Image 1 (cartoon, helix red, strand yellow):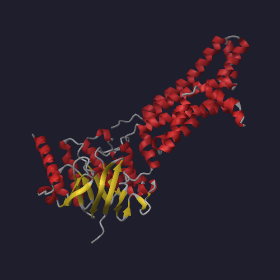
Image 2: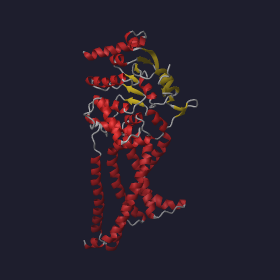
Image 3: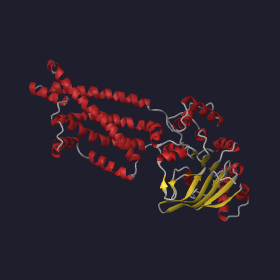
Image 4: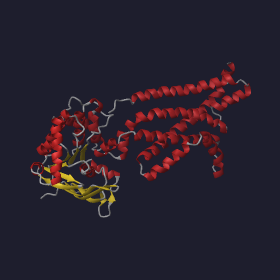
Length: 261
Length: 215
């Protein structure tokens, strides 16, 4: 069996006295789409942020393609330098709940920035790659628009293009549809489905259960800073045995029913 | 009036000195204030708090006290600065504190998500500052900073009090010889006004350039 692309072991993260991640173990193999669900405060987002080195962690380890994320010297817990972190992050894509596009740059320039400054592509080459990705996410006619001139769904698709254009080893999606109007959710999820079909390895934090069922190769339920349940979408979502998972799913379902009323 | 005109060549020398002091203070304080302001915004606490203390102390001391302190104080530490340099140094020390606050405010107004988005595509700190933070912070930086530039020009008149023959002191010297204060003070005011008004016209232009749509 090949070593997993992402390997999280006994990960512990504390904010002051609060333990947010309390020994998380997770493996993600190449081409897998792992959907992480759980109540707010269960640590899903923090887990993603640790994988992309946006948070430090106190104990345990995270390896992406064999490289330890948080520490250059794991035994002595020596943290990585800013420069090392930048290089590591450039191979891990992240899409944010609130998009975080660069407001002073056009859609194309948003995608080009990393290609030019991190990947070192020449301007014209970077533009070509950026335009290709933006066209792929359905924004070929919005290339020179500023973020402020785009709808939320369009902005989020730029966010996805900006991340995947870097050809990351793994793509992290942090509740990327929760800030969107319901009618815009579909266009964003369609893009993600396309990426999944092409074999992009992803860790997806979401509250969209239908989406989890459709694209997830595996679903992970987090509870109180740990992975409580893990399995195929059918196992986890359709026939849940775990009591807190059942409660969580019931609450989500109730909300979905309410929103259709 | 002919008196005022006759004194123009003499005042010209003073004006040059005023412009020299102002230019040195503005560029010096910008360079130092920029570095310290960014450090105050992004540095670890150990770096942040000395900068804060500096800026808080300096901003609560009258500029004139600083100028006297540097001019009369420098010989006591064996560093007898000429009046021109003592005054310029004092003005710069004063201005740096203000630039720090302006930079910190401008940079701090940029949402942390911008930093995270920059990190996520692998930009280093310098790259994030250059391509993500500064272009956005410029809008918030320019108006108060250009304001502080005109303040520097006006504040430079205080250097006359330690004997630097700037525009202000040359005006007073002409008055001392002619006993005609009004025309010369009016002329002086006009010259200061011309410098600062052109600066504020320039600032409006610059601000318009950075007024792109946001969010």
